[in-house]
Length: 87
Length: 200
Image (tube, each protein chain N blue to C red):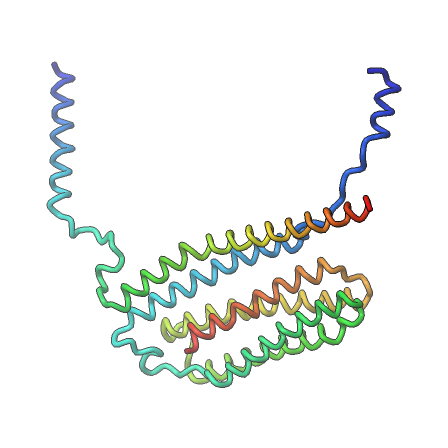
């Protein structure tokens, strides 16, 4: 009986905390551009976010493609060398 | 299997095929290092772009701060680009005959040294005009971004000097030249982006 009462109190406390948080959404600035809502600032955030997200992927993909191309070139060289040996 | 047949098998085993490395170890290490440095400069440029976009009325440079020497630095940029092109010629000369690479490597080194010294002279002039690390975010970003690039240029010049010393002794290998060249190409190619974002 005592255990059940404590549990009910916890549920009520958590619910009350969630309701309070829902009532004050402007207390936290989760969005970094909300305090400076100029077009230039929004565009700068968007451009730098896109750039910093795609740039490392592009670099890794670029090196991957280059390695594949170089590997194929070496395979072709090996193939032509072995054909010359057979002839 | 008897000991005799095992030995015979071993003796008749085909030689492993030795092929050229896809990327030499030094160049691969340098590429990884350059990746981290590119992300570092990307972070600095992004922060600069955000701060610049927050300035009221888009007034950049801020009121009361000296203007950067755009035309003079354009000449310096040309010297750095020329240094990179001459280093490409150095590579082709080295492939023909190692000692043919001496003069183009010296020219590349000289142009790089000119760039660093010119940047130093520019800094002295700007400090005299009142642009310091603490005078504004404009000054702070200028010295941080351009200074970081200058340090990289200085380190790359030391590496090029070491390369020349090895070439002079006849000990320079193609992989060593490729590794140091990759670092210098990074210094050369990242500069126009910094010039565009910081100076223009």
